[in-house]
Length: 284
Image 1 (cartoon, rainbow, N blue to C red):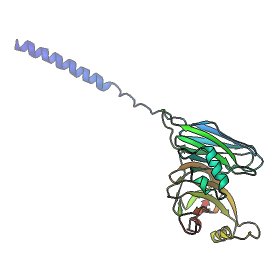
Image 2: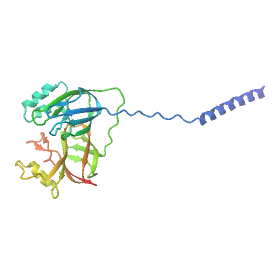
Image 3: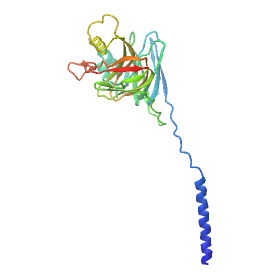
Image 4: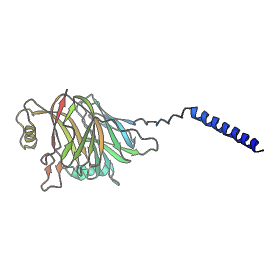
């Protein structure tokens, strides 16, 4: 009887071993591949008489392409209206105060870039849910368009791969000393406590940063052409906002500046006077 039971246990153990060997020989299941959500895309049409934006835009990361079909440059910038603020209230505040500060207090600024006639410019914004306006100060009355962003429940797209990180803080630009010539994707992020903008100027041969600063801060009309060429400009951006922009710079020496006023100082002085200026070298 004991021998029969032992033989029976041997059979059970043999079956278990064969089962384990069979499982071990089976290739492990491949790990599931995460599905990358495509980047939502929006087209903004800018002309000399109108500015058109889709009424509904997804919240989150969105690729925005501005087409300029006009005869003049256009630089629409984007702003999120504060809670309870309407487009009409914003425009009333803008008309009532020549400085524009009353209107600026009603929004969070996301920035924007200038687009030459017949050209297009792509930017990527991180839209929080809410009500927005796009505003273009060109020749004639300002063009304005409103839109709403709503959060979805699908997968989130990946951030654009940035080759240059440009942090705007109080009062300096944190970015590399040197970059390569050609098209580069810049991630622009305001990590300061004030609003900031970013002008990128290529210095003429023999010109210095001091020459540019002296001209910018002079109250007199400059005599002769400026000692620089404006290559790119990012419109004012509120604290905590971020965006991505493709900047195409030829080799040379550049200066990066912020001209916005610091209203915390008395009297208000510009960020440039606070030292928000940076030299950038672009190499072949």
